[in-house]
Image 1 (cartoon, rainbow, N blue to C red):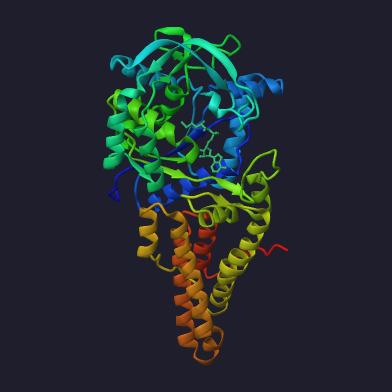
Image 2: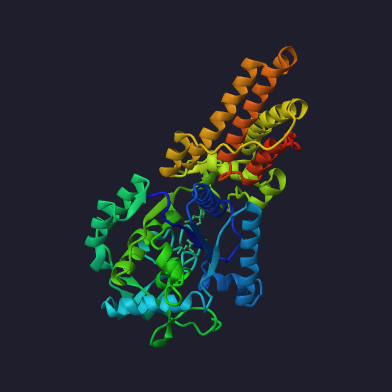
Amino acid sequence: MSEKKPFYLTTPIFYPNAKLHLGHAYTTTISDTLVRYRRLMGQETYFLTGSDENTQKMVDAARKVGEDPIAFLDDIVSTFKGLYAELGISYDQFIRTTDQQAHWPGAQLLWKKLVDAGDIYKKEYEGLYCVGHEAFVTEKDLVDGKCPDHATAPEKIKEENYFFKLSRYADTLKEKIASGALKIIPETRRNEILSFISSGLEDVSFSRPRKTDWPPGLGIPVPGDDSQVMYVWCDALSNYVTALGYGRDDALYQKFWPGIHVLGKDILRFHAAIWPAMLLSAKLPLPAMLLVHGFVTSGGKKMSKTLGNVIDPEELLAEYGVDALRYYLTRHINPFEDGDITREHFKEIYNANLANGLGNLVARIMKLAEDHLEGGTKPESADFSKNYTDAFERFEINHAIDEAFRHVQLLDQKITATEPFKLVKSDPEAGKKLIFDLTRELLGIGQMLEPFMPETSKKIKEAVITDKKPTTLFPRKE
Ligand code: ME8
């Protein structure tokens, strides 16, 4: 991708039936890091996130606490936004699928395009519906008659639905993915989806009869048939283009589409099969890329309330601060595999790499600068090492931050080898020059850290520019 092309990146729109957990915080943080890097490189960016609201799951959650579904949604969405503010997520837009101005016209236009292509038909459907998954499941997905993920028995449903002719697009999709016209990173996920598509694609249910207990603001009416509402695919996946104004004022769409979708491995099939098939049917460009990350686990297990190993991002934010959390998520979890987090490991890493490593280095260099340099503005060092930019080009953000921390280590070694504390006494001129050089190198680290740890980056840059030691960046935790 050329450097100056506008860069559009999306996260999944999360279900607002409960507060976000660390897995969601992971997706959003790595997405934010990728966007911040592009901004740093001078590229024009647009960063979209949002919430997936027209769901039974959400209505049930609201009822459970005796709240009106719409008021419930507003509450949960404000907790999403609160968490994003604390995490420093620099999104440009937060799209809500209940937004009748921003979202519904585009979703309905897309539906009509699929109708025009002859890809929507009506059919009686009988199946087992798991509300937790918001999806139809089959007998073989069940254990003792229950969905193993949600420990609930699915509802038996017989109804008339509109279907989308997904089957028609299997060959084209395979060709687009195999040829790289639709890039899927990493390769293992690309192969996984190619073999899934090779085994054939069935048409998918695209609407549900409107439920009488849903308030009118919920569920996008199917164009020309108010008795039906869109089911997740056209309702939710379409957010990636409606947010850009598709179906209303599409200046942003013209500028930014196609974009990159960041998502977890659990929703790969929807994004690599159903969504591109919809776009093919509507004769719209395919997404540029799907970046598929693994799961964040705790103690080797998927976080779950039953296991009691769920870590609330708010807890880590309160104890360690935003940049420590962003540091852990971007460096210590490989974006393309499952990665683990426990409170114990977090603290160990925090003390070793932030309190001691980076925090200590900044304190040492800036103490020298405060004592021996006169102050004054230093030119920004604009060069980023090739290791760093290459890692970002490959979306290996953990390796890009490794590169910043490799420089922390190099700088530590340089101080040990050159002993500026002594040199500045024996040869003040040479000592000052050395300290100045150290601050310049520290500035380079501060710049490299911007996409990962924006507050720390800012503090380092300010310290270097003013030659003042900042307050302790990462107090040691006992
Ligand atoms: O699937 N580790 O919403 P959702 C890492 N609304 N990421 C995790 C995670 C974990 N343990 N758990 C969740 C939906 N995620 C739909 C999406 S998009 C048009 C519709 C992240 O609230 C990851 O990004 O269940 C995963 O794909 C997403 O949350 C699922 O969020």
